[in-house]
Picture (cartoon, helix red, strand yellow):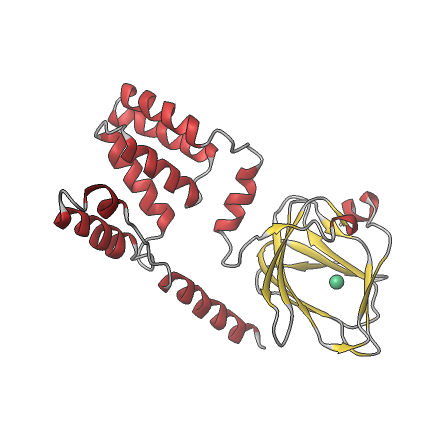
Length: 270
Ligand code: MN
């Protein structure tokens, strides 16, 4: 696929993902359905079902940011603020960010309101350690999921990586995310016929290197073709998170051979 065609299909995929983001809310009917059915319907079907769901116009994270700013500014620190703080966290606002957001609001809305909001936010983000912030921020820059920690292949990686299966039909495709400095060991994709691997940069900045050749930079949209039998490695730049799609090119008698790690000396000389 050409780079333009790929960019186009990624854009279409983005639109698809966004169009599907319908917010389902039942709190109105659950809590007030018997007492105020019209209010419950407006809350669940209009406020959440229509306004919150217009994610093609304004994303959920931004809507959360606007909503908590509005609630805190009015001094509303009851269960509705707790609900919206939890939702803000689900929508990608990190512990570092909420701390900064409420500090900022304090100057415009009032010091005591910020104190009250901080007391609630502290509990909502209690188990979010600072280290997750970088990963959360990276996820927001990328349309494919980060997925789960890559435990299956951790033995063949230097540093932390994450794996998200994207396709398991026709061609196996996974999104692989590398923390800064993370790279896989030298390895070879073997095949009697066909085989090999294709990488497409998704987000951040990374490297691909074949043995005996200069390393090649991978940026979003960069396509790398790796023939079967070629010794190589791929991973993040030292100062950047990185993700690439990995396409398993179909072949006969395919297998992977994992070799030695890319030494710090080799890696740091890039
Ligand atoms: Mn490979």
